[in-house]
Length: 417
Image (cartoon, rainbow, N blue to C red; front, side, top):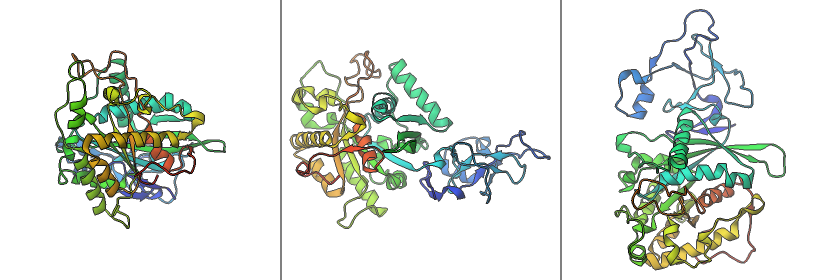
């Protein structure tokens, strides 16, 4: 029985029990008249946005009947509206009445939580990650990635046009105080290992605004989202660290960002929130896998060895995630952190999370032009290792093959993976 996690309110339901929403269509009408729109108070209460009353008038919601007309290709099924008789494929969450794409309800979902302080590059990271999963990385793994639902498809198209055609960086994520941020929904299709056919998984990327991570109190809105996540990616901007800012060459580089919430505080608050939702293990450490990704590694070239793995992409040989390569990157980032903040962030992570790995990435490959900081580099994005955190999380779930290193022990201090 497929369990569906609503990507909006994160309520869990069996797919077969999800309600339907009437299309209010004349096509397929069985006598009488089409249904009229009704005010959906449950959905209006959930969105919490200030909108005219007409915005909450939607098709009537009705319970799933016992017998369904299945959609071709294994979709979410159709059901006839008990009032007008028109068949509809639109499923809704029973808890918040958000509409769910039919193909989202037909497969397992993996919710990836994306967090980081303001200006850490979350929106740019997602835009580049999606492009890499479709092209370079998708080719290596025989994967396909498609946006699901009108909202995600529209945003996906806008992100690609802005960044890759107009060379314009995404705007800041909207804080919770101004409304709810819809997640991005994708269907990831991967070849079945050792068998014919494909395996489909729904990926949900939910981006919390940096302003909502300044204190434990302001993070309350995202607690359910974090507790439902199969994995968390914490983006850490090294330019927020005093030791890094002091070590960079003077002049010629990009302007330094203003100081925001320290990554150490964000990690500690996330762990506190997850423990309150019983995601802690027997030793008090959170059991949700955490990928900590140091961003903007292109700005660190003067601080690392020219042969550092941080300065090149992994080849993904044979369509397998290279675990030895991950461990090498993890150890290098851990060593760098020892010099940046005396290892305080790593010690915090190691004590709060049972499974954590460190990564380094650059979404753009080089800084934005100094004269146009809202633009991408003129050469376009030339990313480094943006896919590594996601592939690690997918590999842990058995969704992609992993090339294991020899059994000689992992780097010092690494939490088990």
